[in-house]
Length: 87
Image (tube, rainbow, N blue to C red; front, top):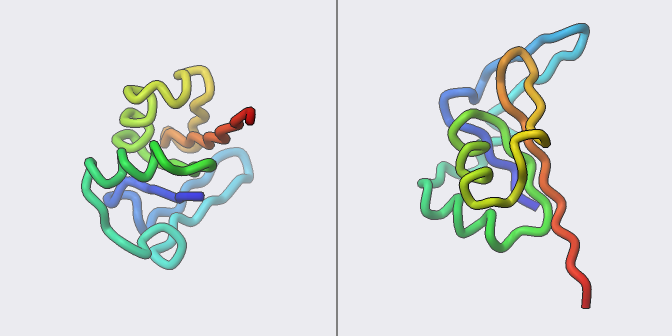
């Protein structure tokens, strides 16, 4: 599982219809990564929790999800990806 948030959103508090989400440094910023590393992590992971315009756009461009799966909270895109594999 990977949790990736656009760096400029770290420390933000998003509020919408009684829902409050704190994008804390402790949860989302264990490590700062570049776009190429994010792509590699997204290719390898089974579960991804993504927050922000750039990382969600990257996942969509990689065809890991479709636009209809993206939710917005206070205007910020959120995307959760679960990969299921048949063996």
